Length: 298
Image (cartoon, rainbow, N blue to C red; front, side):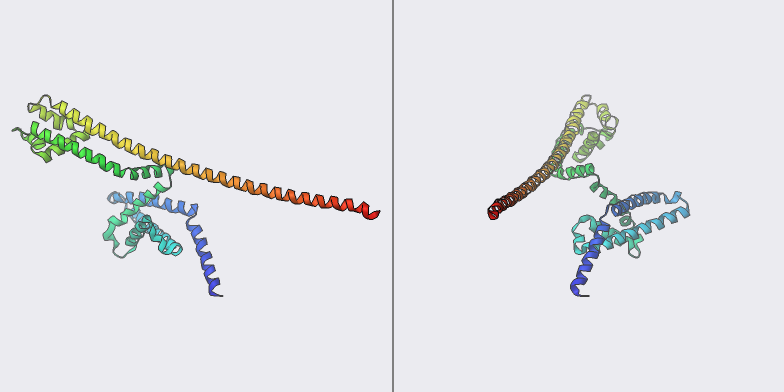
C-alpha cells in the first residue's frame, strides 16, 4: 500500500471518527453523563448519611464516568490534534479530567469536583440561555461604569452619615457609623435592605436622630432602585442588541438564499432559452430538408 493511500485511509478514518463524536447521539450521551455525574457529586456530599455500599457504588460510578470523559478527550485529540486546545472548554476538561486520573488525585478533590461545572456547557445548547449569557458578557463593561457610580454614591453617603451620626457616645451607633469604613459597610447593608430597619435605622433614631429615616430612604431609593434599574436596562439593551444582531444574521441568510435562488433561476432560464434556440435550429433544419425533397424528386 502506498503512502498516499495510507494517508487517504487515515483521513477517511478520522472523518468517520469526527462524525461519530460530533453526532447528536454522542453529544447527548456525554451531556447526560455530565448531568448525572453532577447529581452524583452532589449526593456524595452527604457521605456521612449514606450507607457504605451506596457510597462505594457512587464512587465507582464517578470513576467510570471520569474514564469515559478521558476517552472522549482522547478521541477528540486524535481527530483535532492541536486544534483541540484552541477552545477554552477543551482546556478546562483536559486539566480537570487529567488531575482526576493522576495518582494521588484525592488531594485535588476540589478540582475533581469542578467537573460539575461542565454542566455549564448546556448554555451552548439552549438558544435562549446562550443569548442571555452572551448578553451578560457583553454588558460587563457597562456594569463596571454602573458599579463606579454606585461606589461614588456609597462614598458620599458614608461621609454624610459619619458626620451626622458618628458624633455620639452610643457604642452601637459608633459601631455602625463611627468612621468612614464602618459607615460605608452599614450603608451597603441598608442598600441590600437586610435588616436595615431595626439593626441600623432604629438604633440611629433611638440615639436622638428622629429624621434619620428620611436620609436612609433617599439613599435606598437612589442606590438600590435607580442603580438596579440601570443594571436591568443595561442587560435588556444587551439582549435587544443580541436579538437585533441575530435577526440581521437571519435576514442576511435569507437574502443570500434568495440571491442563490434567483441565480439558479437565471441559469435554468438561460439553459431553457439555449435549448429552445437549438430546438428552433433543429426545426428549421428539418423544414429545409423537407423543402428540398420535392425539388429533388422533380
